[in-house]
Figure 1: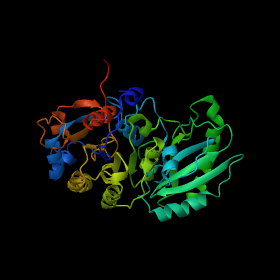
Figure 2 (figure 1 turned 30 degrees about the horizontal axis):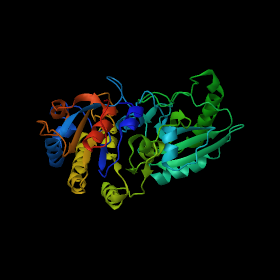
Figure 3 (figure 1 turned 60 degrees about the vertical axis):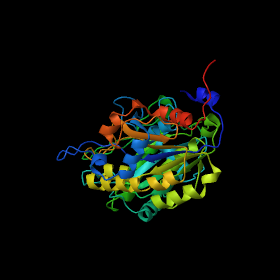
Figure 4 (figure 1 turned 90 degrees about the vertical axis):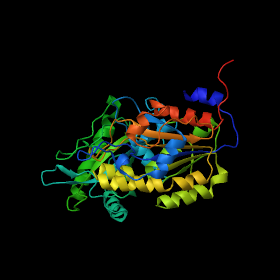
Length: 400
């Protein structure tokens, strides 16, 4: 269902919907046990939710396509990820409340570690502290680019934001992160003739940064991803006729919510803090996007046991969520992050939806294998929102 049809069919009522996104939820079997992280973890509350509702596997973008977190979340929000594209730089900027202007080109930065030959040995510089990131950003602000106002802002841990501001800059630029180790960072290339000037400026910034960071091991180099300018998207609340709020710790996911017009609620850094924030604002909104990051981080680090532990922590808050009495509770992931791959993957993601209007299927566990047999089957993640709306009685009849 496209957004125009959703806007046409949406009706208002007093129901409440919660979308609980466990980032990087899906996994792959461990070579020693044949069980995924979800299968190996102790998740009784997710299993009970699956037994009370309907289950399936979502495809965030398309078969065989490995999604970034941006398209993975936008799909769950109901936005076609092919049509509504946004770079990671914009999301980081919005997530830290940076005042992004129409002439700005933003990029997400990672501090990384390179060896003496300039080859990447750690794409995240050991996940340095945010304090260290702030100190390094202060150094990078010394860089001057001709005719450009440059901004370098810390985000969280190894992540930072770079913004180039000048009239006529084009954001169609390639990334410098090769997404693998033991190779050198890539240079920025223009993806359109109009972007040649911006590419040259970005490469000058990188060369200056290389010099400044050379002695700051482990963060002795940087990678830039997601060059982009601010796009214009239909607003979630206008489309689905709901007051929508987001509860997320990491700036990027707060940025995603802002991009589609959700109210981003201030919250603490733990999942328990997020639950308290959601409960505090329960009466003010109709829709809540609740984000949990730890499972994805553990998967990217290739730590099977840590991802299991993160999933068990995600499971532990399900009773509190259900006690709040949402009319629809969805548990989903923006993509799979198998620890055996230590990266995002193209595999479909477990999904469960519980509502009093469900026709429960025979799924009794929440994991990749069990959800494969669920009544929803394997379906596009963009269908999650119309399913939620229907089960909240927020969609009127289509046609005569």
